[in-house]
Every structure is written in C-alpha cells, then in structure tokens.
Amino acid sequence: MALTETAIRNAKPGLKPRKLADAGGLYLLLPPSGSKWWRLDYRFGGKRQTLSMGVYPDVSLKQARERRDAARRQLAEGINPASIRKHTKRARAEVRANSFEAIATEWFAKHTAAWKPSHSDKVLRRFERDVFPWIGDRP
Image 1 (cartoon, one colour):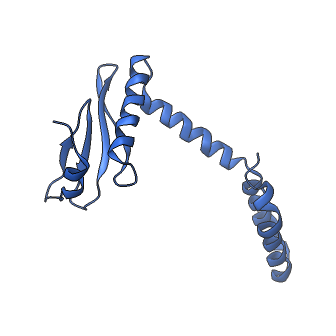
Image 2: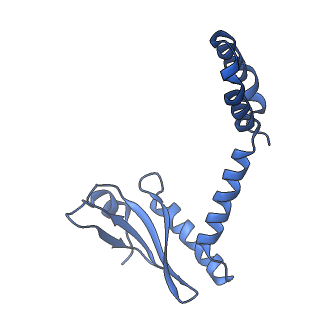
C-alpha cells in the first residue's frame, strides 16, 4: 500500500530503525534519532544498491516519487543513478576548487605571513567586500 502524507507526518521513531514502504523500491527510513530519510532500493549489475532521495519534510512525498521515477528511467537506460550522482558531486567540487575565490584564498594564506596584520586585514576585507561577490565563483 502506498504512503500518504498523514501516515508520514504521524510516523514516530522506535528503538530500531524501521522502514515505511511506498512503491517501486521507495521507502521512508525512520532511525531512532527521529529524522525521516527517503531511500530507494534498486538492483544494478546484479547487486542491491540504495540511493538517498532526501529528508522529509524538505523533500515531500510527491518530490520523492518524482526522484524515484527519474532514477528508474536512468536504470531503464542502463545508467546507475548513484554513479551519476557521484560524478556530478565530483564535478561540482572540482569547479569549487578551481574558483577565483579558492585560488585567491590560497594566495592570501601563502603571502599573509610576510605582511603586517593591518595590511593583511585590509586585503582580506577588500577581497570579501569587493571581489568575491562579483567574481568569486568563476573558474
């Protein structure tokens, strides 16, 4: 039987983690801590895998079902949704690491030891106020 918003809101954690099943491998995990995690169990390459879909109420039942459907479409095309997520996360981290703000912060840390504290504070403040908001996230 499919989950409802009322059943999700009224679900209370127990002493052990428990699952409230929806359909198509989607379920709500209720650990003893009281949080509510959307998870999707699927098989890829003959192995069982689990994909996190977000936390309730940040991700509603409707959104979780849409994410499940998107992941199932990827599986139908022979694509592992977990590997797509890892690749996207790695690409975002690489972009952040090569941003102007990251490089400028590294440069500042390297040169600040040779400067007086007042000059160091002025340079950092100017970067934060005048430069980073405009071009800080550019590669």
